[in-house]
Image 1 (cartoon, rainbow, N blue to C red):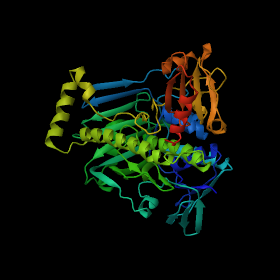
Image 2 (spheres, rainbow, N blue to C red; image 1 turned 180 degrees about the vertical axis):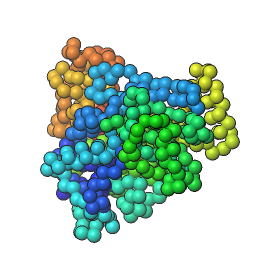
Image 3 (tube, rainbow, N blue to C red; image 1 turned 120 degrees about the vertical axis):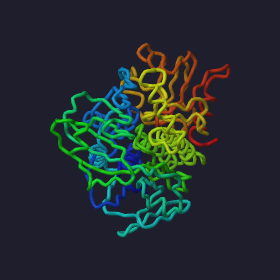
Image 4 (cartoon, one colour; image 1 turned 90 degrees about the horizontal axis):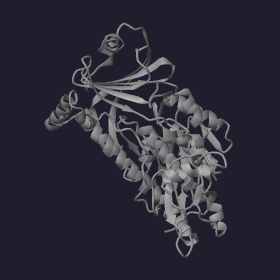
Amino acid sequence: MSVVVVGAGPVGMTAALLLARQGVPTTVLEAAPSRELVGSRSICVQGDVLDVLARAGVGAQVAEVGVTWTRGRTFYRSHPVGEITFPSSGDAAFPPFVNTPQTIVELLLEQQIGAEPLVDLHYGQKVVGLTQDDDRVEVSTADGVFRGTHCVAADGFHSTVRTVLGLPFDGMSFDDRFLIADIRADLGFTAERRFYFDPPWNPGRQVLVHPQPGGVWRIDWQVPADFDLASENLDALIRRIVGDASYEIVWLSMYRFHQRRTPRMRVGRVLLAGDAAHVMSPFGARGLNSGIADADNLAWKIALSRLDLAGPALLDSYDVERGAAAEENLRVTAETMRFLVPQTAEDRAHREDVLTRAVTDESARSEINSGRLATPYSYVDSPLTTKGGALCPDARLMRGGRLRELGTFVVLTHWCDWQPADAWERTVVGDVIPLDQEDDTSLVDALGLNPRQVVVVRPDGHVAAVLTEGPGGINAQVTKALRRATGWS
């Protein structure tokens, strides 16, 4: 029996491909009759998320067709007031951020699904009902019933599955609206992110400019709630940014941003992911990236549960871990929106004070909040974590390949012998990798390991335990950590 995935967006398709990598068949149901290749939508893919997409089979392609940017500049009116520069990616597989339109990411994922026999994608299958019991889930569409051991609900902001489950979607929506225009033009500067507070051509509000492939730029204007695109002189609006340069409009859209989440991301055998579970303002690129992290978290947990290798707490840990990540992302983006769209006189005064001081006082620039860029969430407080929780550093291995390519439980040993003790450990642990070779010192240094230590790494790349061999050896400690990391304690 397969897993039923509702929604063939980037989160749903990534989940299906990651499940296929674990040997799990999936049936993907998409309500739309076909894929709509309209607009760029989400564009900013974080480097660690590219590693996840690589395990799904498309990471290198997403990076290759996108635009890598390593600098972001912030302006207040006509004054430069901040700059971030990412260091060289060094030995990392991918740069910190790549801008690839969501439509292209979806095409690459669908292409990969077409070559994957374990994934069956159906269009025109709008979900109308869902039931479940202790053994399976039944998802109903107008065409019939699809049965699975579990259901991944990745059907977006207007999630039918969330509604059928009776889950609220509490939070708030902002009155201010945002006009997004993808334009093809030569803006006269290189591929960098630019954020403008209170520019002369959008007084009292802000504009964000992001590079895209093919000479296209995303221009994101904050506009009043009563802004009417039909009655605006759009050419005059664009000319304030491009000047006399020729341009072509590729896509236009109006958005209102939301800060919402469901109180539970797991209901029985149904796991909600991406916008079906949480939505947030896009400043900081935390929407798509957090949704793909949801898919990465749930895939290996469903796979182990289907094999009866998981303890009773493993599926519950999905809600614990990714619910905490959603709360963190909502907290960070709420702080950003409080600065970008102040709702009180006090907040407006604070923003004006910070921006004014930043023109001449470099120490004030750290107080400017134009969006804290996405980073992987650390599961430090997870019930699965013995010691660790952060995403394990990636590295090339002396034996070949990279650590994050593996997608299984991995035990890293540093001058410390460990081998699986029984059939359960041999099945759960995909690789035992000794790091006592000269060519593996980069990973030892990144983890800060001492001799006689062992690191247990989860299939999603997060550290489950860092253990030190004692007088009684290391075996019992590793067994306990593995049992905990798979939901048995």
